[in-house]
Image (tube, rainbow, N blue to C red):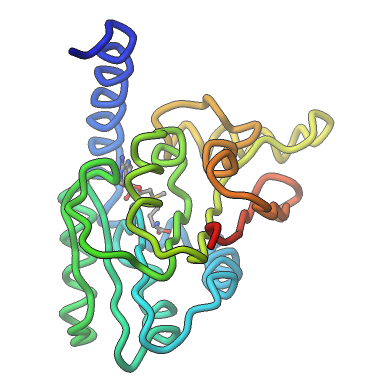
Length: 219
Ligand SMILES: C[S@@+](CC[C@H](N)C(=O)[O-])C[C@H]1O[C@@H](n2cnc3c(N)ncnc32)[C@H](O)[C@@H]1O
């Protein structure tokens, strides 16, 4: 039987999932344009995955599939991309992108990261600007449980800069209110991930308002 605390945590997660899906349903059509200023961080994050031809990579909270082209370059010719995305409108954009590029090695799963029907064990996982996912221990456990020993994991996103970086923090506040269901955890957004991996390296960019965390699962 589930404890009252467990029930409260679950209710909290499902209401934040609903809030997040409503947020992204409204943004899906213009999302790619909105993300344009952040594209250099995507390139850095995907480089840190150190993908090899034939790898399978999980793109957790894949949104409209903005990472797919660069992930394809890393895993072709025989690799696979598994995109996990609960917001139907974002997923529809991702599917349209896959069809437009005739990519035949992309599986799209319309589910939250905690509930996605993942199969087998992947070589790498990307959490690119997925703060809500990184605040959900069950989601992280589920994803990490479907990775091979030694798999590369990279997470990127917003974080609070040092307190005196008030202009950066004003930007982080506005961006987080627009794109996450809670401001909780922005001090160390990677910490739940870091608890499960030894030696997660965290780099700061964007005047302190962006982090790139990367590491490998234990072998
Ligand atoms: C800021 S967008 C990032 C999208 C994509 N990773 C990118 O880099 O463009 C955050 C995405 O995470 C998705 N998301 C939110 N909660 C999630 C959850 N519990 N599991 C999986 N994805 C989730 C949202 O629907 C949204 O598409």
